[in-house]
Image (tube, rainbow, N blue to C red; front, side, top):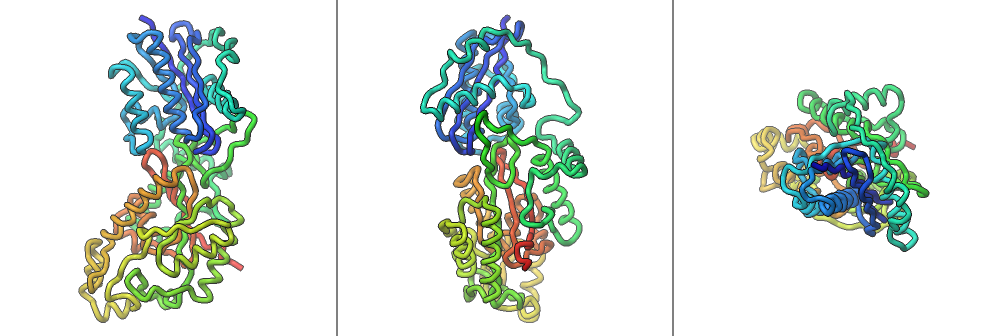
Length: 453
């Protein structure tokens, strides 16, 4: 019985940007290239282009012999793991593509194998040829690759390495530690002069949460940088991304500058007086605007509707030449009757309510405030909406203490009590990257290096 090997790849110069795919159908017994397919598909993401390459390869193989078993070989861990059923498909744009690919052959006739990028050069070349043709306003010409079409290319299985299966967290962490020890971890830049490590105060669950973040970040650090497309430098998108998952939606989380209530450590949520920035807070906003302008990676700005965040966002927007979008989901928790009070004053006036609030995320502040559990639901909904809207882009979210801590907590998979074990300074920057597989990594927490004179 005949057996086919399908090698497929896709790329996007910008992610999203001008995109194309390449596919090769190979005779498994002889190594002969039977079919080449490539196409420029317009503006799309890396992952969409990879799925389009898979679809083209499977269709080409089926046209040759619908009864032949097929081995798909790709360097996209995302596609291989999702099509193998080991990873869930959460991105709405990829679900129909995966379903279409799964329906081309009966179940069990297609198997999937991850291979290193250097073992997928044929399909990668075709994808780049398609993108080059698209840049010229043309479609890919199969006649340009006839020599390669007729030349046999021996196929050997990808060598097994001791690094573990694709996406293996333990192996990734080991690679990251080795890279850090050898000074090769520069692919994940920190902001300003910061070292780029998470600062989670406290013990117990706080320590465990930091380890989870390290493991996720290790997977990113251990992934090689994608090779630039032929004849064109690959633009930097986000603050660093694992190439097999595409560029993440990267949220740069900025806490607003100080208000008159900040140095007095008073509860200041969304149900109080809505104070503006103080003179110190305005200076902090200008300094962070300068720091972000030097970084040059922020593409969009989204802010909470409260005055202090909109004022901070406006300072940054003026420096970067961007507009500010307001999202009500990013507002601070409503602290009810505690608004404007210090922690000591709340303990004196409402001791039972405060004790309940400290021990139960479902507990509300006195007077019908918002519980941390309700805040988390609201923040998660805002996060999901923004991740879908800004996939592959770097967005500055100008918000408050509780929303930022909640985003970090959810990214780390930490329990609600971890909110009390994080310290977040005024005008500090944190970064969370959200990947196409539904996972996230905390890159930097509580960096205030931009505030130094």
